[in-house]
Image (cartoon, rainbow, N blue to C red; front, top):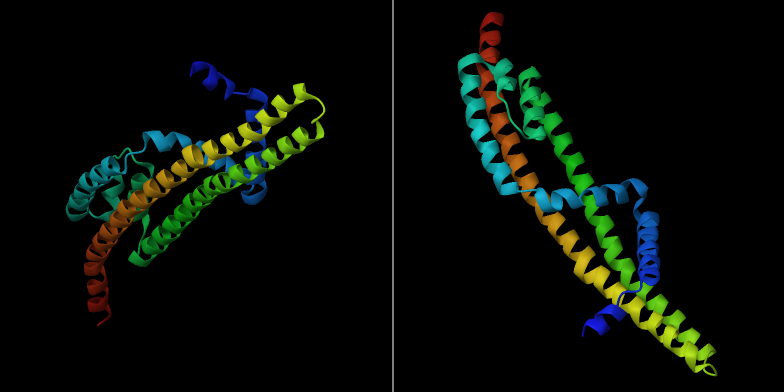
Length: 222
């Protein structure tokens, strides 16, 4: 068994497969998107949307209290560990009108969703390219076999190339790229869900706190 497993690892064939797969993905998505797809491997392991959601809800209670006691301009004093929540609190404190905060939030979440979608697409491209390149390697190996029918010593390496490229393509696509893409899509959906919840809560606070100002302005005009 160990011997068979040892035969499954061919560094040159594996490197050629990986290089071809990433080259195809780079052509399809661009170097920047592929780079972000590789960087996304870190949050793939460390991200915890449920933890971030609970922390955001706790922070929103403090932001709401600060807004009621001291006004919107002090909401950015609530310290949070999440960059999005920190930016949102700062924007809430500095936005004179609710519609300005809503515009910023909509653009920010749309841009974030677009970046997440590009990363997800890059990993799906890798999952699609790997089996195709594996099949191409199989064809090359078979051609090598038929070309070397008069040389039995050359049949083994050609057959190994044909089988290993197919094996590597299946592994890269179905055991690495596709699961990574699915996991990132799930994390993105859950992250955007709690961020939309935060935006809706902040927008409610902004409208509530700005309402007395509008009423006072109307009375002054009257």
